[in-house]
Length: 101
Length: 201
Image (cartoon, rainbow over all chains, first blue to last red; front, side, top):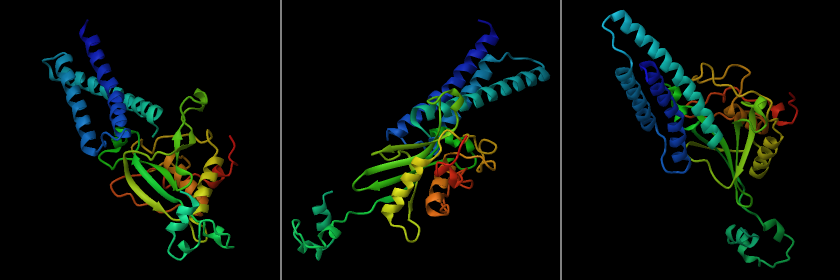
């Protein structure tokens, strides 16, 4: 597997985890197991950010030149942001489908 | 609750009449406690409702009618999925379920009927108007700028549904304070014709 495929798979797994996490947390809340408070949402968001930083560190090729590094970072950030927004939409609709608003 | 229990619970003066009494006012004494109408708010769509951070999270409102005889009725607006076909996705529909209260509730606001209306009539009117709601007509868009605290003018969501339903019964939308939360759509209630079966596609 080449570097781009590996990076794509990691980002895909990261994005897929967002609806899974939201559905899981909502299920716990709707079954009176856990109240999804602001700290819990913040911990989930921090874990996702940490994960995406790890993906960048482990999967994005390192470059010596600053300009190249900047371009790689920019492309990575835009890709991850797009995947994140799409994943949030999927999370919303999956949650509505399973539990309602 | 039986009539007999209700009568016994209403006071000592009434307890003098026998449950089998045929006195003219015995039927009038057969009262039960009037329903309560409460607005429940919870974070919309689980943790996704915190997407508005650093602004407060978005609330989703439900009207909960608790009646001693008919039980608990929960009314709210929900976005449609593909239950009426893919072309009818992401529209607003009236939702009703019974005998379970919403979970994860952060806000509870007791609602009082307008002057001259009994609580029983208030609860009844809310249910009737919700049944007349024109589901599958109005689109269900995201708030302004997705994470904003308001809807674009003329656009409605589940809070607009609840605000509009209450407004159509009460004559005006009640003012609801939800410190620490935001409720996009409450400022833009659905017009009352949606609740009279008059809205057409």
